[in-house]
Length: 265
Length: 331
Image 1 (cartoon, rainbow over the protein chains, first blue to last red):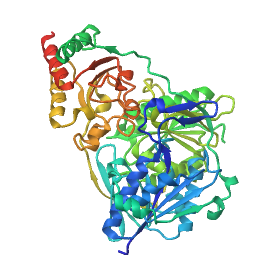
Image 2: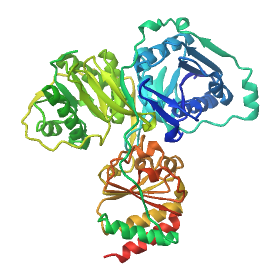
Image 3: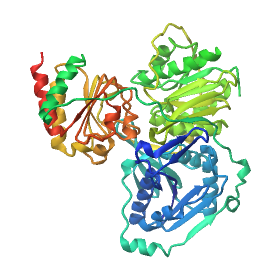
Image 4: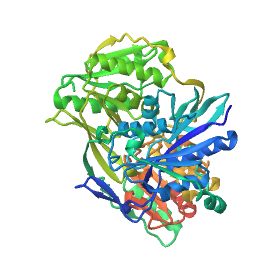
């Protein structure tokens, strides 16, 4: 097997582990306005990057990180270079805003075509902002290559990709010829932490910036998603009854009595 | 858009029957169809599926059946081809599917090839009477916001989240069962299945009570304390399961089949007991269907208390044994 060329697609989103108060909903503009939380690489995309780096450790080759956005955040994306990606390509254009999954996939495919040859494309299973889970699968369909969804482990055997694909119960072992696209779930493992030295050395790695016309995309043909409404989710109409007591043991006993009193137990 | 097309529900099957989610999809489909007085139809895909087809016929005017040996087990490329071809001939106005692992894999392909759009993980889908468009509501940003998307091109494709709809109960139709001539070309399969490793069978979605462990439970010893509570509750309930939030699964302490939340199971028990679970919005989105939620957490500021009906602030290692002791004393 020649060393594989792996492309990993990365999206930047507001840190999804932030508290509910950090996600302000502007219903007029139909936007979520993050407050007090940093932009991060979508955690599922980090899982995909980790999977790519493990394959690189075993087989050599190159890992190319690609990001598509209305305005790129190179400082955040550089993390990919610090952990071991060889190249970072950012494709930015103001018109890449509020696109449908199909338009995003189309633009990413155009970037992939410009990169040229590849063996494997990895994406996260979904982005933790709009939670659509379609872009990777659509890319594979557009490129006419096999797609395997929801990987918890990926290996290359005899020039083919072998994936442990999540099922609701257990998993399925699935094989596909290369080139192929695999979407990666969190079970595949967290992204490694870079060493101080690697962070330092990565500063020398170049970042390539492309515009829509560099990848042959006419922004006018991109479709915007039809968002009718964006609102705060309705709050759960319950107020918590706190069970009190002098000690933890007393509270535990009081809880049993309370649940009995309310007819729950 | 084909304004006169039917609303088509893709039936989910398991062990020769309709899977429980099918009745939720039929409920969603019937509500959408009623608004515009469209026909409600069902589509069954697989091999040896006469059982689920007959069952579904009780709820719809027509059941279409694509039965072929190569359609079992599920292969996404072949299923996508069959659903795509059938939609080209039936021209449904809306196509309602369940948010399952399998549909997530094939639905984007179907949508693209039909030149239409798809909204995944919907909790509500309604017909806009003025335009005939389908309005699909779904939680976004981990559940911190709720979006309503508008689908115009037909078929309007929506994947409906499990437990978002109550199952339909009336099955009084005598729908016609219509076999569909599906020529499945096995060479269209781009992936091959080598093996299926079945996980533990856990019926979280049918449980009356779920005792669930979060990061605060920390280790095997902690989990044992929850299991002791489960044993004590067995005297009062038949269906009790151990659940978990994602950190416990990521740490390898509890199998993934017991994970509850956005990327795990959605549950609706009578009683959900959250132990050491801080209550991330991703976890809460999986438990909102619960009738009553009890939270035990030593951090009084934990967001779980915002979702709970009853809260105890304290170390679970001390709270649970006392709870069990008192339960044993109660008649």
